[in-house]
Length: 251
Image 1 (tube, helix red, strand yellow):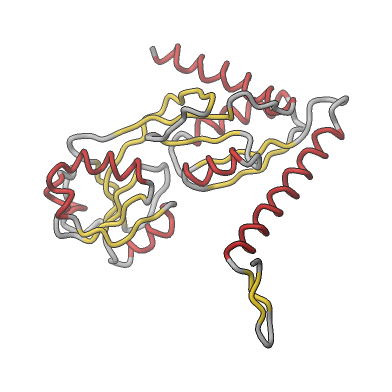
Image 2: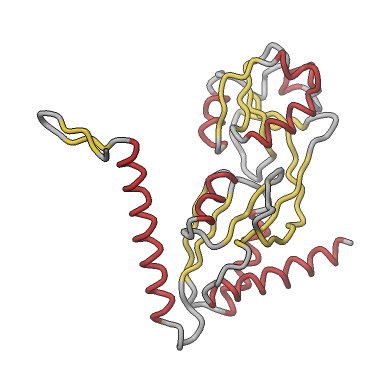
């Protein structure tokens, strides 16, 4: 059953909402395919759909895209912001070509390139709070304080390992997918947020790193064995060259 009928309106059921969502995805994919095939015999063009979470690794992706754009100025881009789970779903259904994931994440179904940036975990708190005056935060410092953490299960598992026995004592009031709105809750005294360090400023707030340190890498991924459009294939080749050069320089 796709909808419920009442006296004044028709309301979609869960099955109806799912069908509408899939139909929207099909329309979006069809439009992108038509654009790419329309220009297949011309200078490299088309549209590349990219998904990314809120990470410092985005700055590296931006460098890759900037140099790619200088070479192929007619290529266009579509960006989607979300957590790794949402981006993976869109890659699977074909509405995203490439995703930038902060680890931990299951990438067994994807080709990938490692991005040479470490995502450092810490606590976003008010500057004048007890935590805001510390040089770093230990597990015991967070017991008894209202906390907001990532809603991703793999991240929660890693955080639980870091906390050890203290994890069961935590007061977790919010699980989130993106940080900006949570930062507004922190600013207004709702609680503190466990998050990764970002290259942005939130007035009145301070990021305090964890101790022992907790940090993970990021990966640029695309679907295995996919038949990619020319622009997507060219970007993947370009990204491999750029990122391998950065890694060699670091090593």
